[in-house]
Structure formats: C-alpha cells, structure tokens
Image (cartoon, rainbow, N blue to C red; front, side):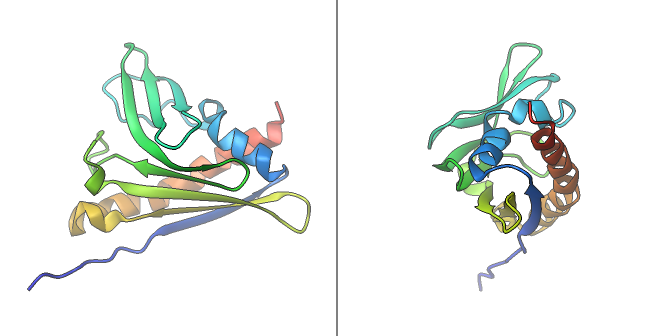
Length: 160
C-alpha cells in the first residue's frame, strides 16, 4: 500500500514600515542587500544574490569564482502582492535541479492597519523530498527564516 506523507509548512510573518510595492521590491530586487553572503549552496562564497523579475526567472547566486548557482525559479511574480519561488535545495544544503523534489516559498504582501505592510511567508511541500529529508529541511528552514526575515526587516527600515 502506498502511503502519502504530509509535512507541515513553515509560516512566518513580519510587518514592515513600507508600502506593499516597496516591501516587495526590497524582498526581490534588493535581496543582495539583506540575504547573507554566508547562506550559499554553491562550492564558492556568494558574491551576489539575484531574483530575475519575471515568471520563469531564476533565483540564483553569483559566486566569487564566477559560477552561478540556482536556488530556485519564480513561479508567481505579482509586484506588491505575491512572490512564489521554488527552493531547489536538498537536505544536504546542495543545489538540486529536480523540480519534482523542490519545496516552494510563497511570500505575500498586504497593507496593514497601521500603514505598513504585513509580509507572510509560507515555505511548503517538504514532503516532495521524502519523509526524513523533508523533515530535516523543514526543521532547518523553520530555524533559519526568522533570522533572514530580521535582516529583511532591517533593510526595509534602512530606507536606502
């Protein structure tokens, strides 16, 4: 008998003092300013992080050795509203281009009552990796996203 596993998504939220359009822009076009250079999956250190601004675009890092390492691909691109990207990283924190095994990150931007923007992030579909690897990845990103989002919030607050 085949058994379908389900692994709970990771959900995190922050509020930033910016319009949804600016919050989206900082998250995407300015990811290189807040994504840590220490959080790479390539063989060489990160020189730059980039998200190409269209459906099908790559989320990738350009490394100091000149190589590009794909982290994922854009599935939904709605500036000021929603970004969905694949997370093409395996449980050993290495690139894995097998889309059937990729988890997915859905980021939504909505105005809040105080004039800022609520940013809701859901990282999901860990079960695609299998039970043990999926749980390991879920635990890793559950612990990692809070620090990353704090860096993002600080970049929005910097206002540069």
